[in-house]
Length: 508
Image 1: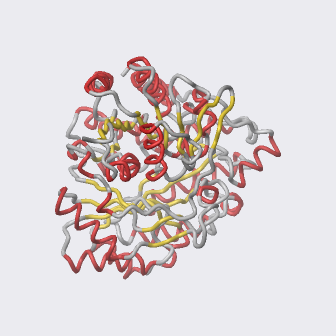
Image 2 (image 1 turned 90 degrees about the vertical axis):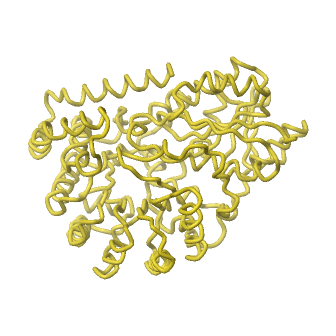
Image 3 (image 1 turned 180 degrees about the vertical axis):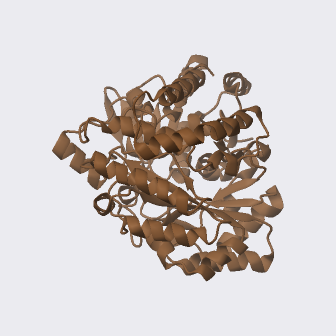
């Protein structure tokens, strides 16, 4: 006998979900404590279970679930999460729907405004609080003792404070990897890899003024960045390599490199054990790469490291100072040239556009930097630049609210529209900037040949993408270099495609 069935669902992720599908680690973390407590947990990933409605109906018919949980990020995933919640209520109005994840952590009130898609919201680290909520639902006891829980009580929203005084570090032995039946469905961009995401460090020591991390970790006592012991990390790597045939480890730390010796110790331990895996790092900062020697980078190459995600953000020194990146545009250029000496590592750069007070001339400096990085380092990648969105608790949110009267989205539907391809806020930038945003966005997909670098064209989708890259790249480079924003029919076609995908998500 179990304590009851819990269904945990991962929603569709919008346009990016077409080429990147990593395992739903957030669901595994959320399930850790309830699995240990004897609950039956079933995972349903709508990215790979296209006919999710029939599967969910079947699961709910077999046994009335204690609850259905959904892990949600802001933006397009909300659209599918709403559909999931409403479908649960359609099948059985009495089954509680619980939302967790990044959006739930910061904006529980907006979620509870829709009574037909959610009953409870868990903010912050949720493995223990989700267990407490499930115990309360099973026993019919009160909700006041569930940390980080928000719920409706009459016309009001009740909210318990979270108890996140320490980082959540779940031992790998407690991560219920067995809940995923088939790992072959996960991967990215047409590559034959068994990718496992994991942490080597918790938190972030920096104070970027646009980033939610300082607000997220404000309640954490002590140091805001805590590296895990190299032995602990490599034990985890060895476990997933031997038990689940993982051949690629993607470290999803906010930042892996504040202390270079931390990464060195992990790589040396992996090499000592001769574990056959390649590595990727999500978090790297320009100021950190400046401290890396060629010997250190060669060590990364020898370990099988093939990508580092790097926050470049802007080509304007003033904007870089405003957002607290602790570097200059020339620092970024010099770091890129250093990385070009180690082409086995793909330098993948993130950019930000539309920061309050940024001018069109400063945005063009970012354009110039993007083009220079590609010219200096043929194996670098330029990710589609993100449009700035003020996040509560950040310095720039206060600036946007005080100086321009910014009003953050109030409804779930408004939050669902927060996407890189969506419209940006016009309050704090020059009228011509949005056209330049659109130009930078569409051209960023092509100027670096990323499709040719990371895909093999094994499916019709990627064969078409590779052909499109070859045909359009010269046009993209010409347009971007000259800032030609007129008659940007390419962007209209791109918007049509993303809207078509969005309608498909709603109908799925």
